[in-house]
View 1 (cartoon, rainbow over the protein chains, first blue to last red):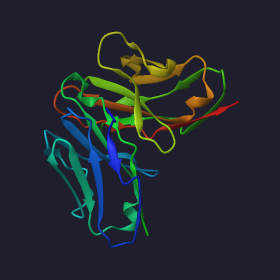
View 2: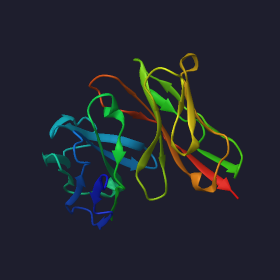
View 3: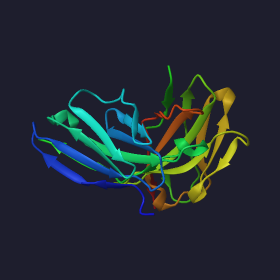
Amino acid sequence: DAGVIQSPRHEVTEMGQEVTLRCKPISGHDYLFWYRQTMMRGLELLIYFNNNVPIDDSGMPEDRFSAKMPNASFSTLKIQPSEPRDSAVYFCASSLTGAGANVLTFGAGSRLTVL
Amino acid sequence: AQSVTQPDIHITVSEGASLELRCNYSYGATPYLFWYVQSPGQGLQLLLKYFSGDTLVQGIKGFEAEFKRSQSSFNLRKPSVHWSDAAEYFCAVGAAGNNRKLIWGLGTSLAVNP
């Protein structure tokens, strides 16, 4: 398996623009997580899905952030409009149900810079 | 409140020296405990995990960790560090059941001198 695939790896945009980050989880994994990493706040869980259904979105910072998982092999995290404080590395991770459900496999991340 | 503390923000060791990275947690339920490693520009990779049983767990790359319930600690150790071990190390705690939210420490950055 190619692992968790994220795109783009780097995104530079201007304040007010829409940003869409994409994730392809490991085939067969039924949990998908979106994390944000910053120096100040460390790793923050934004939202996670189980079987394509959002389970907990309490970490989504505000209405500008939205996430979807239309099928088992694809998820998006959208920021509209983007702001400079959204600059961070965004990670997608997936896992398999059962005892290993907390064992996350991470993608390489999408580094977002909002000017 | 649930929390994970990694007291050391940055550690420097010489290649071949032993290593111990500290992790303390505060968690209401029986914890699942994890150590992940992040190399520059990469995602996080699982080093090892503790769910139950033997409190000394072995992981990849020669790492081990010991769960001490009385001290609420899960320290990571390696007897001889290699230059390739330079990275960021994260401790995390979670729970059994349906809650998939891990609580993460802020990480310890490890530098290795040749």
